[in-house]
Image 1: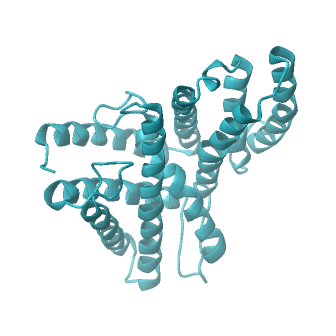
Image 2: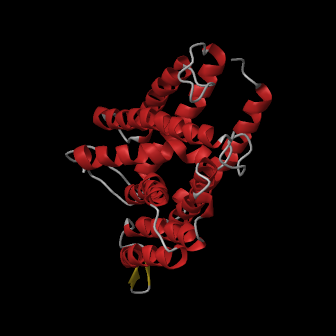
Image 3: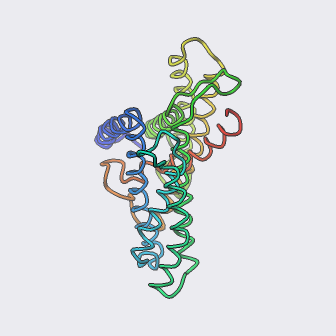
Length: 295
């Protein structure tokens, strides 16, 4: 497909604004980090419930207690993954997340029975999937945002929020390069789920993301450290591959719901799920990799 200059300019401008907001939230302090991803959490949930409601009209009729209660339960999952820096006086947000989630676990089903006289497993399954897909992923990202090095035998050092920056940077580079490469030389359709994606663009995006993140790690390191560079490149590979599947998963949801975008908050990029679909699927795999091999 030919490169659409107007579309690319719109996407690029939106991406710059998005990047500025993301960096401010990520780097200012731990509270800006939590606020940023709390907004993303609730934005993704609103769009998810809308999409699922279009796919399954019964879900669009769930009670307000179910609709907003499951969002709060998901937010409690996020709070549970915070560390000791997140305190208001003597109150730990981690404890708030634990006890709040535990209370909602019992209160929400009781309210569902009280107001609807029944619990439909199908509707419950939609919400449980959302908790795993959105809330658990962002909870794990919150955990990654608070880990520090040294790791990997002392050769790899993480400062606060560095793993999150690597994930988001890898996704952004992969998406941008996949779009450019696919627009310039893409000919072979990747899948019917997302007709505009091509094998050329997908492979090009993954390879360039790995290379660029390796180059960035070289300049970030105080000295040549091949172990650090390799680990950055491995994480970039995980992010790019898992992120591509995350993009396809959200595309499948949109096709089932018969909509083009999950929302309209970002011109040229759609809504929260359109922008963070890759992040939601990539984060658990990066978290598992760091837990298994680096911590």
